Length: 127
Image (cartoon, rainbow, N blue to C red; front, side, top):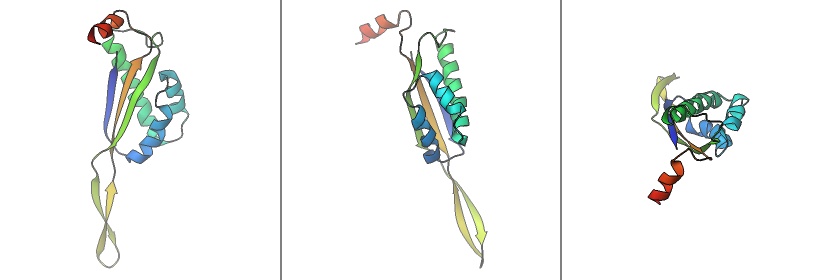
């Protein structure tokens, strides 16, 4: 059973967010939360909140199952570039320079390594 959480228009460049996202890709949820808690970058706080939201989405989807019993892991994490805010900064001699404030979009997909009751039959019927 997969659960998805999305963070849109985060006010940070995608490059900075990817540095932290690459550290938690394919990790168990508990290990990923520990890594994010002790990483000293702003991106870690955004990703920690997003990961907790994804865990909560998985619990809602499975009607309150305990995520520790089914070994949740981060199946996929995507960091894409979002729109840029364009601002003007005055410089000498009456000129202006453009400032680009970057944003990004993050998508986390969680999955469980241990099948939920009744989940194995559904996959066998589809495939």
